Length: 60
Picture 1: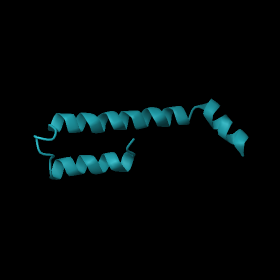
Picture 2: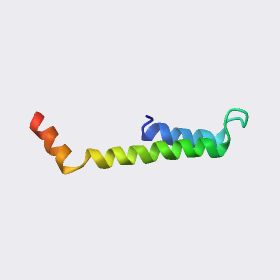
Picture 3: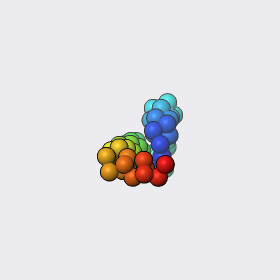
Picture 4: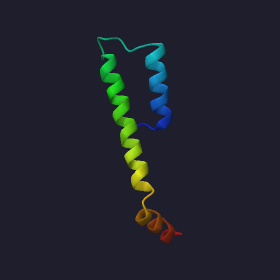
């Protein structure tokens, strides 16, 4: 799963030097990056739940 830096670099690269249409359309690239960013937001939301924070506090 790409991180935030990878997603931002992917967006910049696609804007400056788009992937050839033979490999993937622009819509496919942007959809893939968007889905990865959405998954990152879900992971962050789950990570900062109180139960998870308390679990990690118990480990230390």
